[in-house]
Every structure is written in C-alpha cells, then in structure tokens.
Length: 110
Length: 110
Image (cartoon, rainbow over all chains, first blue to last red; front, side, top):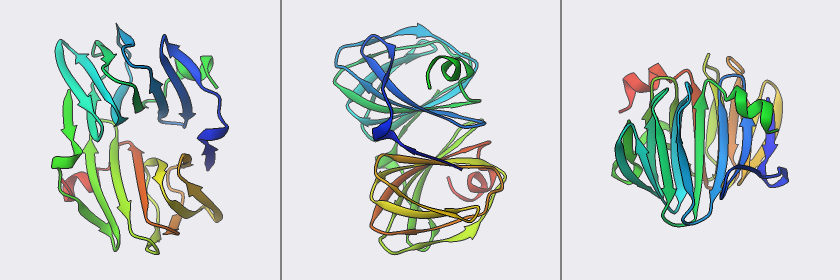
C-alpha cells in the first residue's frame, strides 16, 4: 500500500498556470491540479486514457474537435490518443486520472 | 468522449451506509462515494488496483493487515487482490478509482 498526504507534496508546473501533485501506482497516475483562471492547455494527446473530474471551477475542454464546459461535479472521459486542449474559465481544482500510468510524468515529476 | 454531470445521476447503495455514483470508461471505473459516519466496509478484495482519495472526512482503512486513517487531502493505493476493510470515523466524501474497470459494478450499477 501507498499512503500519500498531498499537503506534504510539492506542486510541479505541468504547463503555464497548471500546478500538479502526482500519485503514481502500477496501473494509474492520478494528478491533483490547480489551474489559474484564463490559462490554456495546449493541444496534445497521449496513449493513456484520461478521466478528468472538476472539483471546483469551470474548465473549457475541446476533445477530438468537440467543445464542452466542465464544471464542479462534472466529469469527462478522454479516450486514448484523442487530441485535447482547454482553457480555465475560472480558477479550477481538477483531478485527472490516467491508465496506464503516465511513465513520462513518473520520469519527470516525483 | 463521455461527459457526465454527477448531479443528474442516481446514487446506488454499495454497502450499508455507502452511496456511490459511477463513471465507467474502457480502462477505469471511478466512483464518487458518500459514506455515513460510523458505517463499516466489510473486508473484501478484487483483482482491480484501487486508488482512494478522501475529499472530506476521516476514513479508517485496514489494507493487507495495516491500518491507516485517511483524511481529507490524503490518498491510498490498494494493490490488486489486497484484502481491505474500513470504517468511516466521520461522514466522508471519497473518490475511488479502479483499473481495470469494475466489470462487476458495470453489470450491477449504471
């Protein structure tokens, strides 16, 4: 078992205005993300499936050409390899989960 | 892409005092769980790896014989097939993520 107190972890900068804490397990990576209002997520994709849950705020996401505003208490599933980009309409707190785990994040961020 | 508004979903009873909403993707199941204070999670295991994040409250978990109190902002990783049980020390709001997805939940709960 792993037991993680997020308050004791340092935030890492994922993109400009996107600050994340990471939990890596064997099969998943979970990121706890704080986003500053107005910041944009550059278009990108990855082979990992992703589930994004917005805890606080409003996050506009464009996934495979379709745009949706994801608000507190809302969830989107981003399929493997789907191009996605976004913009924080307000300050946001978001949880992203990936399967399989993000080996790229694991190498780069603790 | 799947877009889910949790507020529009019905809660299902997982165990006595454990009420859950589900998001099933291809590779993961994410459950948003509300637990009444004092309720217990019977010992069980599953082949799915699990990450439990406590959003609110205090949840005592015993995982593979080791007991930990998981509080708001804390996370535990439960390895595949690890026996686990628990008790809500207070009312709790918890997110559980499983990989691979919980086919048993998918059959039973929408």
